[in-house]
Length: 56
Length: 393
Image (cartoon, rainbow over all chains, first blue to last red; front, top):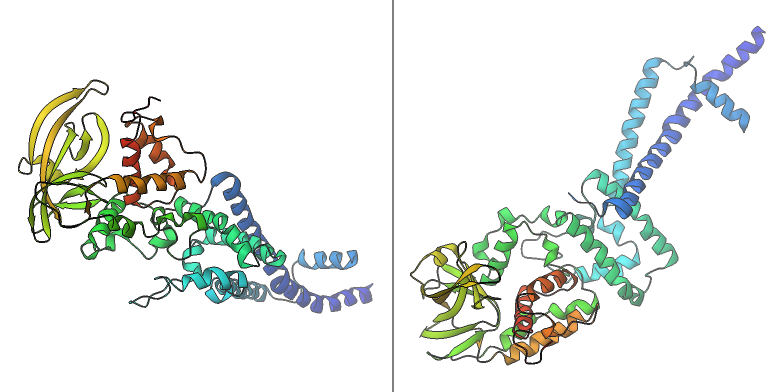
């Protein structure tokens, strides 16, 4: 039982680092760009169908 | 796969065992800064001219055309790059425009306008998109540099002064008049080119005292022969009688009618006919010094009082012609060409004199006529309306 727990703990240190980098370097940047892109697209579509070209 | 995601979820959903709270916060914070800096840098890269002209559609067409214009090279050495005019500067609009550019990427991949011919065919549509945008935002991107308040009207030419002052008063959108200033106009829209020169060609010279002439275009009026103080503007194709010739200046008499409600600044050719002969400044219109007042009548249709006036003012010794026939010929061909682009134009005598201005102004946004040509064509239509036509309509 205690052996098994140690194994997980051991895994944990490197997996935590990996996860940290995966999140900060890949996942969140990609998500941010996607969200901003989606925001941009939604504004564009609104302009096309509802609002008309951007005023001031 | 499922296993990996499960393990990943297990790690991120629990407090960290090995990485300290401070490290995670600072690490996330710094990663955020680096990301946002990188994002903006990338955004700025797409906002450079080098990026725009990396596609041959841009570099071979619009970019080359720009190089003949004042926005490319001028005496003060300031120039506009593509994004200065074509990318909104506000963040939200900018992002929307960047996403809209996916259409341009699509176009490049599938070669929508990959030849000059295809581009020329699409030019009208593409230009209209930009005009719509500039109209909606009141030419915001122009006004990021050009400001009505910073314009020195005194160093403009007289003709420009008149137009620019009127535009400034209304904070008019630059694109209303300045289409085709940085790239060529769509093919069928070139009718506005060089009309001023064409109109001036119709002017004669050697005007004699006592004779009557017609203005070939809108001309400035002055209070005295030094031509120093502006008194108003004479409309195109308007009759004047020469009273005196003094070098570069001539004194003219304008026989007109005006509505005596308000300041009476606008002069009309005849009683109850809204045929514009020009306008006077408030000072001149309210002073008896420059005009002789004649009979007064009330127009029963509108109930407005009209008054006959003989206005005596000074103008430059140029841009008059002996007969309106050449002007009418030019106006007719412009009317035929410009108005038949979209529909069959109505016969001149289909409307009466006072109906034409409304009809005409309603259609103006669909054509590209400069102010002089507009004034001339409208006057032509009014003078050939059902009120003047022999055949009844």
